[in-house]
Length: 331
Image (cartoon, rainbow, N blue to C red):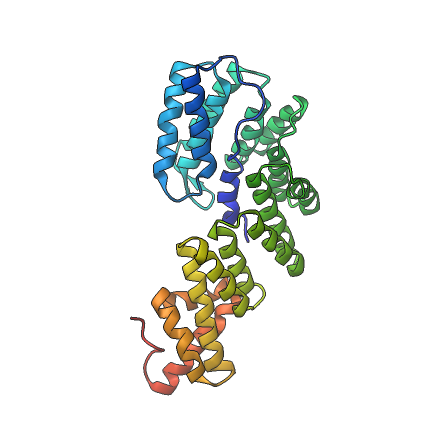
């Protein structure tokens, strides 16, 4: 798992209900309900359906218009602007992060002692490639007595950027092992530990963290899918990858889960053709993979980043040489 792959987790690091002071303004019951609902929509956002995200924006705009001095509402609006501005990997739409910074400035202006705003600011400034400002923001949150788990996660992210892997892992572990921390905070910390272990070649501990990831969010395919990819690409375990991807699809029909299930099935087919030299045994997994994701060429092309798929390209070449045609055609 590389740094770009964790960007969604970094956005999710903003996904935690507001804790701490309520700002200088006191909300009406109706506006408080709107804010709670918007927070819930942002917390549930996973980078896919933008509808709930825009619904949250509508409610937040209404709350800050009626309560321009309410710090938590401005902080949530900053979260929305970060999430909605995310384009791909570590890229954001022009102006989106600056717009989030403006919202956080209003939160701090409304309540200079609102530690949660500084915690989020630390992550925002990191994404803006302003590490010194990020450090200053997190130190300010600490000086205000913040015990927010995201404070540790955000420190860990900055330390990883500096190559201080051991120190980063210690911050992640404090959150990952804290059963009282919000689930999303623990998910992000666990993903950070996975990156730490994979980068260090400690695949056994990484495997244990993937199992924890799945256990933390059993109703989502996300953890199962990431685990399947790891098993196929890092551990050369197509059997385990197939099992984890199937488990993910049982709880959620996710495109990524379908892709990695197909990739693992193509790996089984290729193993039968190239290694075992029993092409008949590969027909069933190939047919199932075709029904799920017919792009065997696309899967084979991913061998550069997923070594477990190298044998798929070999199988295609072997069949082309033997038959004088391409490998089994995509349909």
